[in-house]
Image (cartoon, rainbow, N blue to C red; front, side, top):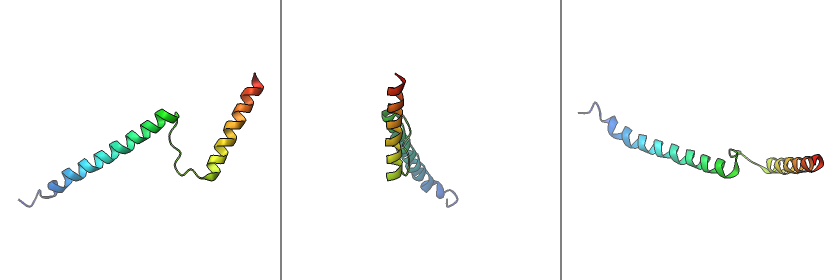
Length: 66
């Protein structure tokens, strides 16, 4: 009877791990669908400033190309 006692714990742990994966994956997919790109992990002030700069440069290049 004691040989397969670990299976009692494995099933709930598997369910919990599976649901955590589903939640994380759905959060990733929703963010990617809304913003059109994956979320940048560890975005700090420098990254935000560079994104703003890049966006401005791309807009200026597009305006100059017309």
